[in-house]
Image (cartoon, rainbow, N blue to C red; front, side, top):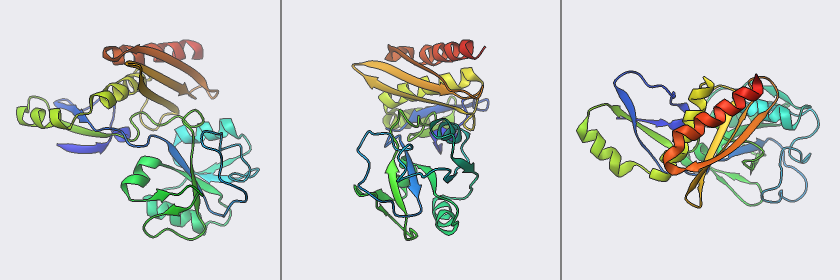
Length: 249
């Protein structure tokens, strides 16, 4: 068995391997971390964050290696300058603190949570070896749609391994499995991978699957939302990919 952050697992696996189980999701949102104490009260929960100048001033520099995040940042704030950044979470926080011309960076809330970082109500970021002077805020999903599979773990196993299949049955979270199946179906139908400028997030509501997606493959955002039975997760992803692709054409 191999355990992955599901957002990093390709939609097409090597011959002989399969996605045997999916964990329950934790917080699916992205987090904006800024390097200087901002003025004023913390933003209202659910309110747009990227347009609030106390978080990102005019022409602020934001560091991210994600094409998905960069595309959504530039759409929300065309004035922002996006630069690349590499390294693990600790390294990225240190780089942000040391680069005097950088204002912020984006990280997944799930990754921060698993590394025992916490974001307090006043924006304080707590955790191991955090540089001084950093504040953080969760981004609403409608403002920054997550990466496909974000915040879930994927358990990859060999086909025909009955012992692992039994283990996976006890590990699998069915609701999350249906959500990420729809998301991964959308991504596969779009012909993209985890670094493509597309995003998708599915949730279960009233025993139905709701999937919202966005594609920046043509530069401008093309959005779609669909609803289906839980058993139709694959078809839902494909249908929204077809809808977006037709709009692109």
